Length: 420
Image (tube, rainbow, N blue to C red; front, top):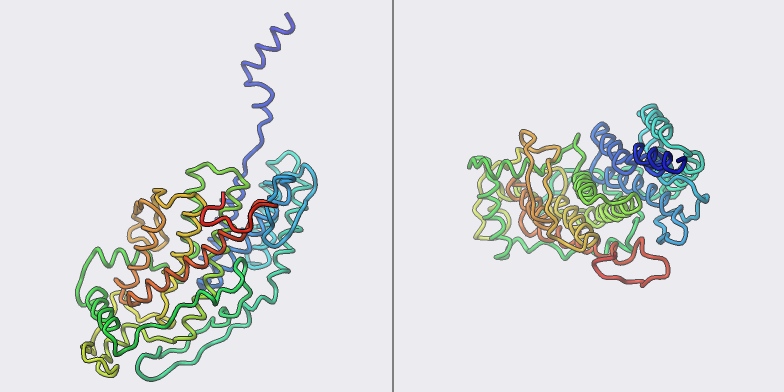
């Protein structure tokens, strides 16, 4: 009789296992949300944003991975092991908290309140939180003095083919990488000569497609969708959001969410280094200057238009070659396709700058990257050769990150494009 009663109670309540099911505080998504908001609020540059995202996500990965015991992979910055039986969700939240408090102290009270609320929902958070705090602080210490400050500026240039304005942030060409050995190895050969046929062809294309005087609602909408100016999450953040969306769609467990976002943000941050070095080295002029001064480049095929205005409404704030939007997109698409072992993972997304908040659907990662890159031509801000070179730069960086980082301990040192 007593045994029967116990069975009835278990059936009615769902059993002890269900009653004691662990609480999911969704650490990776929630704390990345805070990181994205920090970039929006502080109007961070794309380079600073990529660095912040990488630090937050590498801290969460190392905090979770350090509690994985025999299933642990190689660490990103801070090796384990952490305390036995500590809560990995508490560790991830506390690690992200430490990074954000250090990088965005103006909102420390908000981060403190959210961490306290998260930990209060967990049964035994103390050991995990202590380990996470240790990892987060260690990540901050490891990246202190990495070359991201002080800010340096390249002066304005003169003459045909040369970017005319001063631009800041060029110290990022020397920033210590997160994941690859040497990002500068992915710097491409320079843009085509101003007197060449390939240059004239790219010139003619952007003069037509990027011309504000020729209204085209579709081209403008595509440019705006991917424009992501200051006050948005910036291009690296938009690709992080895409990764988080697909991770949620696939219901990845915590450890895999943390590994995916760590790989993704490592690739994005290191792409910054290669991109800034390329822009600094070649200092190429933007289409607005090129088209208005088409009679100074020595190419008889480039017809000048002194009144030409970019569809974007501005010339652009850094040298033209390469497109940073393209390089970030190439890196992200490569990491995401490699992680999921499939480039045809469909997703729907709305960017921070999407006109009217309208979502767009994509059949896969490289398709979205291709559109992001072409949007810069539609906006009149880049030549197509800079789009293609940027995509290739990002693919190179992303491929190295996939092949060499966060691997199974004792596994192969090179696992190709799909490290599962």
